[in-house]
Amino acid sequence: MAGIFSKIVAREIPAHIVAEDSNFLAFLDVAPLAKGHVLVIPKKEVDYIFDLDAELYTGIFLFAQKVAKAIETVIPCRKIGIAVIGLEVPHAHVHLVPINGVGDINFTKQKLQPTANELSEIAAKIKLAYQS
Image 1 (cartoon, helix red, strand yellow):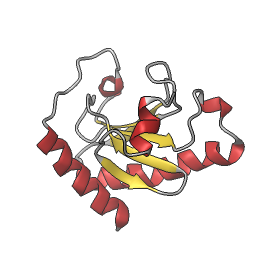
Image 2 (cartoon, rainbow, N blue to C red):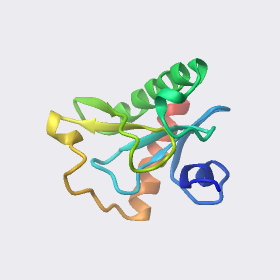
Image 3 (tube, rainbow, N blue to C red):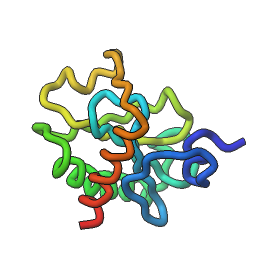
């Protein structure tokens, strides 16, 4: 049975997609640590990031780099933090989180609760920056 991220890839579940190519998808986290928090996934469902083949493993980070540059152009922050945890959803994914300090990427802190409209606006801005 397909997991939640595979259902997003198949467009069975809606998501605020900011970037996509033939192998990867990037979309806003609906319970973000910060405004502009994006998840980057391979379209192929693989649970553990270190089980990705070499091409997908290097590809996800190259794709994430381009997405991070787009986030930086629209979300005020010092840097884009990156985290790979892999326990909450059994599909390899990379978190890209706009940060101003190391505590901003603490996954135990309370998540934001943006509205669907706020997510749509942020996604549109990041998507435009990604395509530029």
